[in-house]
Figure 1 (cartoon, rainbow, N blue to C red):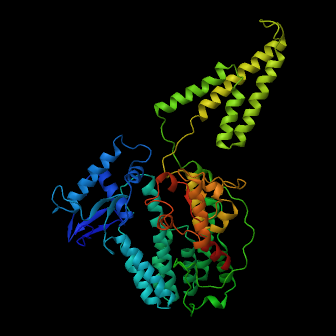
Figure 2: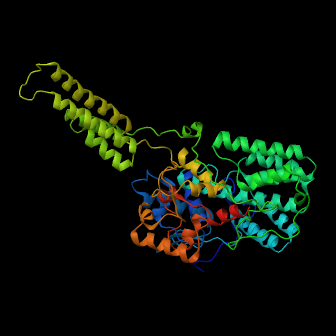
Figure 3: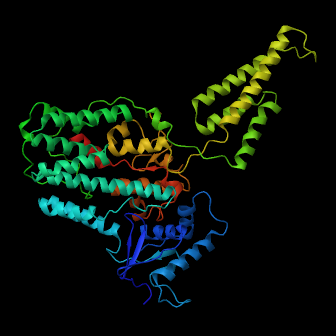
Length: 519
């Protein structure tokens, strides 16, 4: 029957993309065909418009006949996934609906679905105080990870997906480590914690578990050394102090606080949304102190490599540089002023004023009643006008067009996302994701979907005023968004999220901020 689910096919996404029928691995074809399959799997059992597939797979360089290319890859996937289907018969597993292509996948037929189910079950068991069973569920979930998820698939959409999945895995690792510690397994846990901390050096929950495990194992000096190592990494490499919870634990260890010697007797609480509990197992710290302003380290700012210029970019570059020369400097100030407004740059605005002052100052020094240079004043005026035109031409040639970086590798956004994930309270204080606030931190133009006002949301590519209003109303009445999937699940965006939107969206979890305050 049409629409039925083929239970014999299962898929692996937590590593290189694979598909199996029984014990036999299927040949999924070329890289682009595998990418199309990955898009459909990440939106399993939901239709995906052809335009979204093209955006996610090809990004800014779609093929001219993109719809036909997608049809070709879908036909190839049908031959692989439904080999018994007659050539012109309707697909059962991969179907075309009015809203787009839909891949039917039975519950539990992807390793990602199994991972999510085991983690959800573990958190419910933990909330019920059944720690041993919860830890076993998490071990099963983590054993499904073979390598980097969707390995080999390139593009900003897959980069963003990998980052989200890596964060989910790290949270599950932290849950498991806390559960083992709560059961008093610190001796057996310590060797694994050393490996995990090396893999996730910025996860403060994991550092806290390691410090507490060392302290309970009678290794107070090593616990304090672990804190110093974490603080050195955060301060010297990333410009931030450890969070309040880790600092408070450090003070408790220094003071030999008796509350640290035994595991908690009550189950760790979970949030209403079932998210990973942000609890280390020690007393709550004092209220957070004001946080200073931070800036990313120079090494990280230089991490992203600009893409090479296309021939169209060179045309724009030469045309822009020609403007101040052809106008003999008279359009230097206005040209740079336009760039300053478009890029919202104070420095460019100051440069525009400077060009205007030099050009018109030079013009005032010249004697306009004569066509010849007759005095030192004329010579100085001509020199100023020519210098203004030449300097502006070079300046504009350097900055136009705006240098593009490889999608997903903008170091400012990378650093801002990292800071938001590890220190949500600091991220909010610095105004990350809020271009409407005074600029305290260069976040690369990210927009926090949980905090940005309606006027800012309207600036998102392809977001109408009505859609921006719906987003604000939805988060007000139904609570904050916890992931990009929430935007699709609540019907506010198609699935998958268009890459140009996903690249600039930021979700600073409101519950995480509350948890920071409680620590």
